[in-house]
Amino acid sequence: MSAEGSPVSAHDDGAAADGREARPLPAGLRPQTLAVRSGLGPSRHGENSEALFLSSAFVQPDSETAARRFAQMEDFTYSRTANPSVRSLEMRLAAMEGAQAAIATATGMSAILLLIMGLLKAGDHVVCSRSVFGSTIALFGKEFAKFGVATDFVSQTDVAAWRAAMRPETRLLFAETPTNPLTEVCDIAALAELAHGAGALLAVDNTFCTPILQRPLELGADIVMHAGTKFLDGQGRVMAGALCGSTSLIREVFWPVLRTAGMVLSPFNAWVVQKSLETLALRIRAQSEGTLAVARWLERHPAVERVYYPGLPSHPQHALAMAQQSGSGGAVLSFVVRAAGAEAARRAAFQVVDRTQLLSIAANLGDTKTIITHPATTSHGRLTEAQRQAAGIGQGLIRLAVGLEHVDDITDDLQRGLATL
Image (cartoon, rainbow, N blue to C red; front, side, top):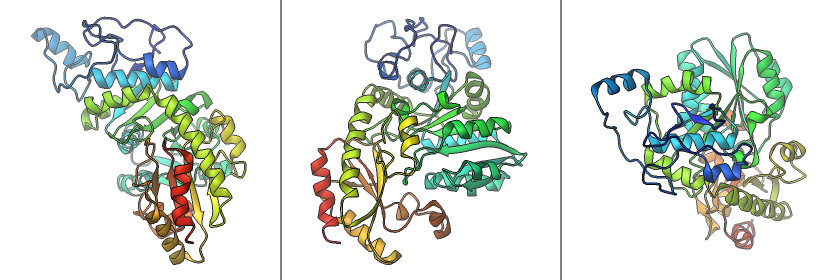
């Protein structure tokens, strides 16, 4: 936190876009209020809605000031190092997560890239859930293996497996909870204790829950990662990512890397996501309520073999999810269609997906429009069959990211395909 108790960005001085001090907010505000009120103060024009600063460079008053600002990277000089719209988003997201600071990136995957580049070097070791997003597995297991960073993938839910995978050179534990697409839930507090006991850090991908349902830092995590492309935007418009954590990590570890490597968020995308955060609580709660209703309907359907959704009592980590996720299962579920054998399962899953007339067949999630996806051939399509099997991604698995349509219209659309199986 800053001296006034307000979260800061990776390079924040607490001032508004024109250099004036932002009006301090009262202490103890809840995430729903912070989503509307936190960020930079208005410019000299006094706008009530946050301004959009579409500028790659900022004019300096004189050479001496320019030299000082470029040397110390204070205030605004060039949008690769700081931009008012990006800064305001960072402040807002940090406030909502209960973090001291945040740093925004171009995508969720670039946030993980920044995490690895900032924290790790050749010879370091990572322990990661084997149930995370397919691109995350590829980034840890393939791309960074080229540079001498080793990763062991373990069961998301088995703390003993995480402990057994630890080495003296382990520097990072990375978890995604709930996971994409099987919605497995890890015990954040238990993993934080394990990491800290070994001198490592715990990073948690909070994309599915957002700070409205879950705040990993309060449970002991060191870093929160977001794919802002998903629920933070919430309408499928822009790409965005972020890391939230302590001021020392954000400013001293991650920001120098971002400044050099340039995986920065564009001002326009930052402005879109910041404005979307104002309705995040309303969207997440409405979509989660609808997802629970769809999950209950699917669980009763004779053509469905299994439903993966933390809000259902049948989910293996239901009690943990309810404790960690504010009593909500979130807005993403997966289900398996009944079929004998991988080929038949794939044909059946394709048939269900292709018979829909309302739902969007797409690879995104978190949109106000419900999206249906076949993970084995999309989000996890680049993995080997062995990796997919280890992650539990079968050919009969379908992921559903529930939007804001009427629940009965969603189930009616699913029935068009399920009825034919």
